[in-house]
Image (spheres, rainbow, N blue to C red):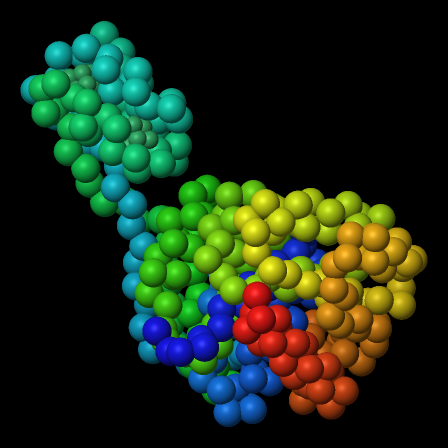
Length: 288
Ligand code: SF4
Ligand code: SF4
């Protein structure tokens, strides 16, 4: 890995805060500044970083997980596989064994416990990873197949194959559940994007609890900062949380990113603010 390589996650306690806009703009601004930058879209249920970075995709690979397949000629219907499965993904009846692929977490428990070696593991595709370049940024997007619920294996695959760049921006899914933790863990810094509303504050509090429990350094960006109240700012002051950027609502900007234009080309002050935010992150990580 490059010396001083920085891995920055951009997350939010809820959707619709402008997280992806910020993550893609930060990536594009840093690439323009001459850094080698990767943007990883780990919001695998609804990846939309491509709308902003408009990448040329050069490679798409399938993500597979292993699920059990039972050979009924060897099976004695002893029920051990169903007993060990914490997820009720395998059920043993009088004369058949049923596997529920969408519930299976691919832990391998049933495979290992079967006394008759009646279980083999077979691959099941659950999503894809697209790899390309857009706006000078290496673009990697995970996408869960429609109807699939198991996001973490796709995120894990993206992170295992991370390119070695100066800066890697990880666009995490919204919320504070397992897929978010998978996306943000092992990063150097987390940017939490929120908005100054009661819902924004509530979700920010949950997100702050998550990053604190993971012991990750973090800061907050308040989007549409002039449209709500000051409770988020007060909360951050009380909790000694660094508010790294406040972005006032701007109709022209909102219309631009609604059609997928990069905001940095429209608003030089945002480019400056993003650059300043990055410098602050770099210095905080260096001194932690
Ligand atoms: S543990 Fe093996 S032998 Fe027992 S029910 Fe399951 S598949 Fe059949
Ligand atoms: S691999 Fe694990 S989760 Fe899947 S059916 Fe077997 S025991 Fe259950």
